[in-house]
Image (cartoon, rainbow, N blue to C red):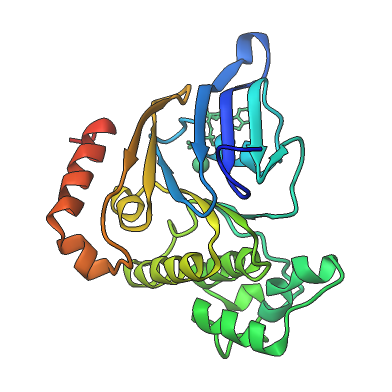
Length: 255
Ligand SMILES: Nc1ncnc2c1ncn2[C@@H]1O[C@H](COP(=O)(O)OP(=O)(O)O)[C@@H](O)[C@H]1O
Ligand SMILES: [Mg+2]
């Protein structure tokens, strides 16, 4: 396939309906967009507009009624190998420690991370020294960071993230935002980030897709023309950063 490149994403006319008859809910209506290989795209929209549904469709976890979806050149009908997913809530296995949870998906597939790779990932996540702890011994934010690491350590070509930083305090969030940018820049991943934070979307992305109230439709596709590499304090001082926040806030109806 073509336009979107090797690890790109193409959606055309995708609709998603849950339930039947009286209880029918249209979550997404005729959504089309394409994301190029190595592009960083955020998706924002009001609560309940179908953002998580969209991510689950891209991840091949749920079917869709209408339209077509291609990820990394493959039509999506199930989970694809080059795709890593970080969900809104972390699902660590309680009987495995941090290190074992971190490398679980690799080990299920018969491989593993080297000691250096584990140590580097634990450092990135700010979890050095916690490798032998069990999930119940960690804070919610730490558990969440392990879940982010579970996806990153597989080094997927396409990374799909559903509000991964929502539960974290502002400082940890800034730190992980920058780590994500560093990893993205170094490893050339295609990233789709769902976030409810307009400023996070602007800080990180090449483009921000704005969904309407349910049923989610694409109402705007905003290119973020800010220089890279970005840095939370410098980028936020750029007057264009404020302009994008105003523009997106207006689209979201929060101003
Ligand atoms: N498995 C499901 N069964 C029925 N309805 C669902 C299901 N998943 C999501 N929905 C509905 O679809 C709509 C969009 O949900 P979701 O994608 O989770 O929104 P968001 O992530 O934007 O908050 C909501 O009305 C939600 O109740
Ligand atoms: Mg959601």
